[in-house]
Image (cartoon, rainbow, N blue to C red; front, side, top):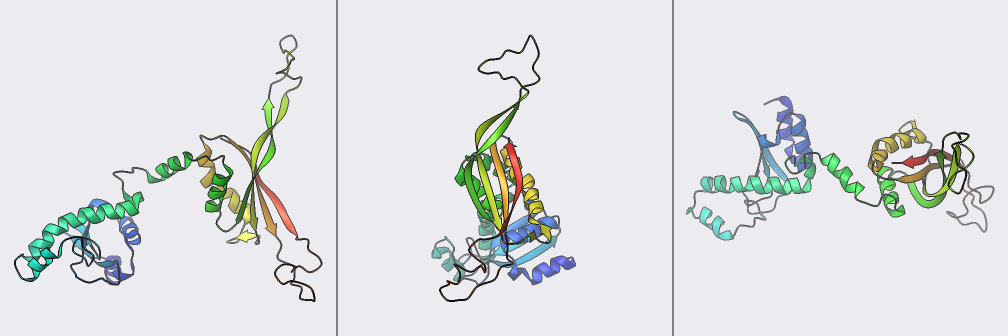
Length: 281
């Protein structure tokens, strides 16, 4: 047993199943090398993970949970446990038989809670999540608000409809070939007003973890949001509003703390920065 495995055994009561699976996966254990069993007890326990055992020959890990068919909340009838208590059934053989079923039940239960670990059903969980998001109406204001609030939980998000300009490159006119009419113009560039979405992100701070907010927003936007619109068609513009915090509270007669709290008047100072404006596809 390595030193890290010894620490896991010592502090196993501090783990939850998802953290334990992530750590074991990081240490090189495959899911086929991890077995689950339930703690044989008739009372409820104060922790979810009861114990863990590392074996070398063959290499495997046995995780004992306070769940399953042998736990305090077992679905098995009390009849079986009474047979074990009075000696009619051999305890070791009973636990070995039920343990096989326990491993399958607990494994499917954990995979249902954490489907990202179920490599049999979901070969690529991240890709499946992206496909599920693409089934939504991403051009809806409600969906855009939900998506941007999920990506930027530190900021206030406002989504509204707006009029934008779409540019068409019609090519240079050619004498003798270019036809002027209802669908043609004399010129190379044509701008047409279209319906788009304006997304406003509001913050009270200039920076996020010592990085400017515009840089952090641009990074998250390109990494998390742009890949979702590969099969979509949406015109948006993103603005960042940084509200100043260099004002003072004014305590005086006929003023309301929390409502009229800016010295020198009711105008609120802010900075407005455009992050993106264009077509997502």
